Image 1 (cartoon, one colour):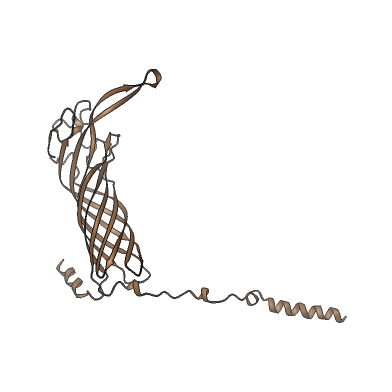
Image 2 (cartoon, rainbow, N blue to C red):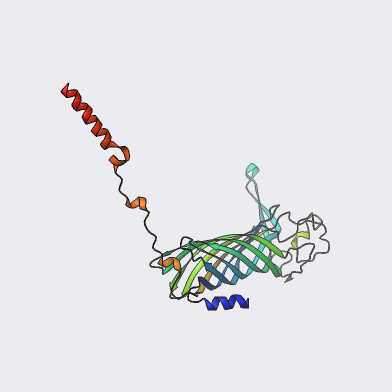
Length: 294
């Protein structure tokens, strides 16, 4: 880290680097299989720091980098429901009224990012898209029964090695823009994290829930002993404000590259030269003249 910082400071005149602080809010959602009644959990805060490196090669448009984010995630799941019916006869329908369990997970996220972009308005606006491989570590978690028969029960979620996964991974994609004021960039971005790993180990690995407390809703009345979902990845949708610093005072190299026009575009097409029309026409004229003389 010290070596990196020294190299960064020594190359401020030409370095193609930016360092950005991010912060915002968003929502989180769990994709259970078999399907559970779930809702988006809004109000999930995120904070982070981003580093980007912009290639010095003018033909490469974009940046690569790495982020370190603190992210609130989680899900809301219907653990209990009451039933009413509407209609008569064949039109009679069951309507379920769910009571929800909420779980918050605080995580450290490490996205490895590729960020292609374009500049507009004389390099005062940068518009970008991004794709990332995301690694994450779950620090801690809290639960709450929002309503229903266990309303008010809440507390710290106790992690169990046989039941819970602390390490996860996934993919992410997003887009955003930045306004450039000298070496400062101020902008906005949105990113969707698509989880591939499960927050809970499935029932084949965690086969006994009889020691679980209220922190886990999967052992409650109406569920089989040892029930946990087969799949339980978590997705996130985040909106963030960004403030960044560009280490190159002059600007990025790609701003000053004037790409020459291709030679094919400058050369005029000569139909006669390409098709040999002049030679053919000359021979035709000689042959025609000889015939008339005869």
